[in-house]
Amino acid sequence: MQSAVAPRTQLAGAQGRRAALPASVPRRSARAAAATPTARKLCLAARAHASPFRDNSPATATTMDSRLADSPPATPAPPAEPRTKSRVVVLGSGWGAVAFIKNVDPRMFGEDGPYELVLVSPRNYMLYTPLLPSAVGGVVSENSIVESIRSLMHDKGRYYEARATGIDPASRTLTCVKQFCEVCAARMDNGADVVHTDVDHTFTVPYDVLLCSVGAVSATFGIPGVYEHCWFLKSMEDAQKLRKHIGKALEQAALPDVTPEQRKKMLSFVVVGGGPTGVELAAELHDLMTEDVAREMPHILDDVSITLVDGLDSLLNSFHAEIQTYAGEVFNRSGINLRLGCKVTAVHVGKIEVQRKDGSADVVPFGTCVWATGIAMHPLVAALQAQLPAEVQGSRRGLLVDPNLRVMGSQGTIFCLGDAAVTGATTKTALPPTAQVARQQGEYLAALFSHHRLGLQEQPEPATGDLVPLPAGAKPFQYLHLGSLAYLGNQKGVMDLPFKTPFLKTLRGYLGGQTWRTLETFMQISPRTRWMVFMDWVRAAMFGRNVSDI
Ligand code: FAD
Ligand code: NAI
Image (tube, rainbow, N blue to C red; front, side, top):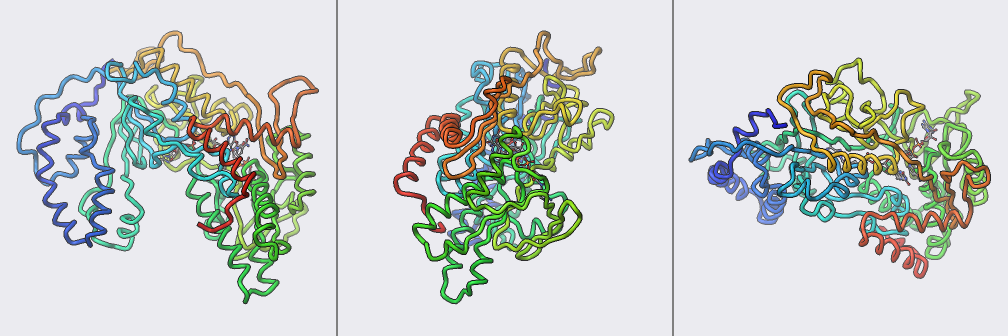
């Protein structure tokens, strides 16, 4: 079960790494001297953070060193020791990846275990996405719904803060691009000659087995103007920007030179997409306006409007029919304008064009437009898919996986989970792109890797052609649906219950709202975030939200 990846072992060696240091240091110092002292400090700090020299991994560190060094090492690297561990590289720090690393057996992934684990993600935290709309509304704080990836990994492996830009399944290598601090990135974007500019920003990470859990991106369906004029709600950065923008919009609308017409327009919030993301965001906006803006800025409240637009005739189409009707009723009673059966065809400055079911067109003006129309395939996943045999791939949603979550056509070397994976033969049998599915898939793979020893063979298995054969007795992944929840505002919520009995299919109203709140607290990533979210609810109930635009 040993790797046949020659470059990795040839380059390995701690001595070689140390020898490469002096050669590259003077050059970086000279460049650093050219930058301002503050910039230099920041850049060096950022560099230290992403420094390859902090990495103990023979494979990756030497690959990076070879790019950084100007001249060959002064002393030759000692002969590489034969590798005995199987190198498992995990891409992503979201639901799927974190469920995997939290649940793997530490003995299997520890110093004496058969695996070596590396996790690569541009974000060194896991985000609890279900409370992202609440973070926009300000009822929970951003810090309360993220947990550091380093604390989640403990000593099970190494973490690299980087973005994978390419996967080469033939050589089993990832190309990654380093992440710099925002100040450095902005300086470099402006052409500043800061320390990093003399170095290649990419490095490579070899793998024996890859777990791809990079999620998906926001779908725009190529509709013109969406990227230019809309806000999104997919990441913490999106939520932070949107929250700040809403605070600014409220203050701008309250300025004395604004006419009543301008104020109405500035305070019209339009959400496109009546799926759970759009519905929960509209609900949180409603609570923010009716509870906190009403208290702090009552003079502008009458000019605030919230509109939800969807091409279909009802909200929450993945939920039970009763819930769809109920959600519409709650929104109507709350004063949220529903524009259902209206498909957005273009977005312009301050207005969207919609097409009704009967073919007629209309225009909806907005001050703020949030785009929440679902997800599309991650570009990294699309690029990998293009390298795999077309006969076994070809879904427009993601990578087709077998019952054990192995990517079809990857000879067992790549597993895929979460939003990036497509299970089942047809769209109807495929599992939905939810946190619940990603988490269970991560847990399943953790059990698979912990109970068996999956490793790379030098030759493909004759019967299957697999380079990483599936262990005998490995059970397929089985999904257990535990129900779906959504918040509708005004303390009300809905839950699709996982029971088949006709009397217990749904939970609605105030009880649904309390169930949502309780479960979203207890399902948190860690005891720390559980406590913080709980305290956020208490804080918001006692003192309200902070409507300042920080
Ligand atoms: P993600 O959790 O999205 O994680 C992807 C990871 O990959 C991230 O860490 C990212 O930084 C990393 N990454 C991205 N690009 C790269 C790259 N090039 N290289 C390396 N790493 C990369 N589902 C539910 O079941 N219930 C809910 O209540 C719910 N609420 C939601 C609310 C919102 C606002 C949103 C946006 C989604 C919600 N979802 C919910 C859906 C759920 O968040 C996703 O299904 C889930 O996050 C998928 O998990 P994942 O691991 O596939 O991807
Ligand atoms: P979605 O795919 O569930 O809903 C997108 C909505 O946008 C659809 O109703 C669709 O009709 C509409 N739409 C698409 N194009 C449009 C257009 N041009 N004009 C007008 N409307 C248009 O997407 P969402 O809500 O982002 O959810 C993504 C995934 O995350 C889903 O699997 C969902 O179940 C999950 N999720 C679950 C949550 C929960 O359980 N509480 C919360 C948020 C997300």
